[in-house]
Amino acid sequence: MCLQTENRPAGASLPVECAGGHDLPTDASLMGSTFTIPDLLRSFAGRSGIAALSSRLIHSPRTLRILIYHDVPASLFCHFESHLAWLSQRFEFARPDELIRETSPGNRPRILLTFDDGCSDNYATVAPLLESYGARGLFFVCPGFADLSRQESLRLMERSAAIMGATNRDSRWERLSRAQIIDLDRRGHGIGSHTMTHVPLARVTEDETIKEVEECAALLASWLEHPCHYFAWTYSWDEITPKSLKLALDCHKFCFSPCSGLNPWPHPPRLLWRTAVDVSKPLPYLQTQISGLPDQAYRSKRAWLKQMRRSVAAP
Amino acid sequence: MKEPEKSIFEERYRVVAVESDRLLIRGILSGEVLTIINPEPETPLTQEDYPPGKLIVLTDPSNVPPN
Image 1 (spheres, each protein chain N blue to C red):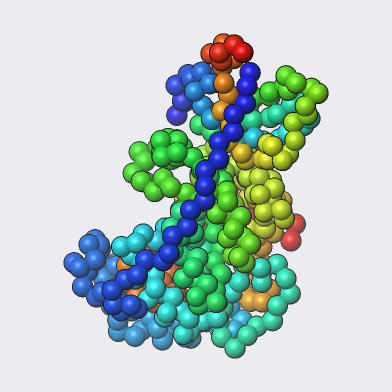
Image 2: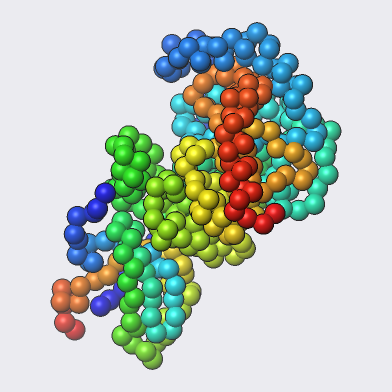
């Protein structure tokens, strides 16, 4: 039996230039987005100034807000730029490594931007823009997708969707390569595990969980040449079991949930709350997302997860 | 969902672990774990040649043209 190896060159491209700079399109029809009633309420809260006022009241230098982004396609890059411009005026960007070393509160509330799934645009456009603001992101990657062909990547995604009882509609097959993951780490960004192949941990066997969490942490550690401190589970806030949460906490310093809430700073707990942001929606939507209103909706979910956290692991 | 049966030569594998005399690999789609014994013990397998996560394919020796 013979072994052959395959290597692919890592590619990087420049950030996409958008006409209008940081200006944000305000007409929904121009953006090709579908708006629902909750979206309109969020938009009202954002545009009326209620969200911005609420955001100022709940955030302080002793709080850490963590946002969840995913891919940022070229067509939405202007939105992302406007998010960063607005956030940079009101928050101090936290660096991922500040979570693992002693730090002190600054003058402004902290915000950490995280990016799930490890889509290739995170390397090509997102990271350079973050760096232009002096910020660093935390990228939750699935290393099982690194360097795969389109066909292989889509088949893995189909498998993950099938476990959820769904059909894959995700076309974002191009993910970060091993070389890009290593380069982001070298540039001061954080690399976290988002499971090996993006599976819902609450729906797979114990053996699968070990592969998806423990082996993934070991693989990333071997690529980065240091431990992988961060883990974020996939799908929704309740797609986690006590056993998988325990394993994740055993293998990583911090476990990031897709459950909105505000974290204390500068001594955050090991189970962290994150607020989802839809980059296809205009700025008022972001303002509402961090106004504290979604945090209220997630209150009972946080209590459920805190209870699970207490039941499984040492501090 | 169970993947359809495929030959081990139709899939790519990721290196899971390497020792001088064997290589542990996992199919990227099937998840199947294989142990490959080094056919040339005088040339040990190394981490440099087979770092964890590296993608490899197996070649059917019956299809390799003779020297």
